[in-house]
Length: 98
View 1: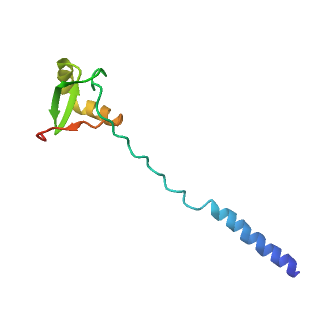
View 2: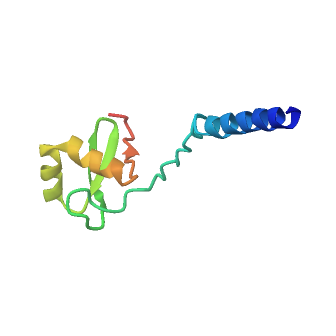
């Protein structure tokens, strides 16, 4: 009788131990740091940038492959900056900060 009681208690403890394992909080996700890349491609056409062709926008200097792309960029600059950010590209700061 004593042996049956010990087996019942052990079974009970084991069952709750296994069930409790499923209730534990999942381990926290480890966020991977975003790799920041220097701008080497025009945000409009994807061509190699010309460091002499740029626009300063909200304190950021954005380079382009040609002057035509500046006009295209100015129509929706936030969309192009978002695209760059999604690619891990952070524009340089404008020398004047403007």
